[in-house]
Amino acid sequence: MSKCIPLALLGAVLLMSSCTRKLTPTASKTVSTKAPEMVKATNIDFRYLKAKGKVSIDFPGVQQTANLNVRMRKDSVIWLSASLGIEGFRAYITRDSVKVLFPLQREYYSGDYAYLSRILNVPITFERVQAVLLGDYLPATPPNTVTPTVSTEGDTQRVQYEQTGVLVQQLIDLSKGRVQQLTVQDQQTQNSLQVDYSDFQPLPPQNQPFAHGTALKVKQPKGAPASVTVSYRNVDLDKERLSFPFSVPKGYARKK
Image (cartoon, one colour):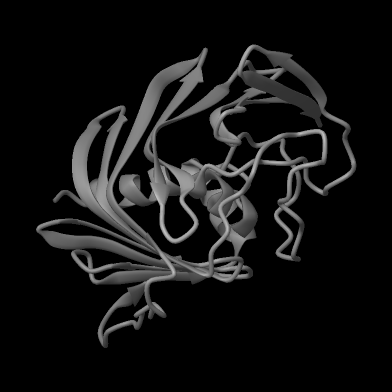
């Protein structure tokens, strides 16, 4: 695994929460991710989530598929690990910090969202990472600052709002109450991000529909397109109390 691949894999997962540079600040305070009453989207309800699958990335100069493991304690911790036989990175994400191990390079990163957002050139918050990984409704931030436009087209509800020059549109499958597509476009640069959710399957114990397929496409008029595909084969809710192992081995250098 080349040195750029684990970095690209991490960037791919975090990019799924990013939208664009112009979205709101990256403060770590708790905000509500519940959909407004007029929006017929239902977010996944759980305490612990465990998922396994594959992530495929197609970035300029990097095309790779890796095994992906995801663990969550809702609204508290997100744990990610990607490997190609050997673990390429491990991430431990909380509301106010991001920690990442790069075992092949014997390096680690530890910092806040503001610093990581500057590195990746996209705004990142815990709520956005969680919502996009789960396929939950993504509200304006802070909440109640923008009133979305809502329309119904057959079995699909279209919800859109504009905030600080960014147009956000979400298509909701009314039969499932779940987001099936998220599109974000910077009105000035025309950079766009589209996330499509598919292969919805009921998750015990409440049979909540969860997308086992996620496809992300990034388009930039002045840059090469990029795509990320995540395919889950196993997703479990509240089957066990999960641990989130993370420690920095002796001799690892801190990334600056």
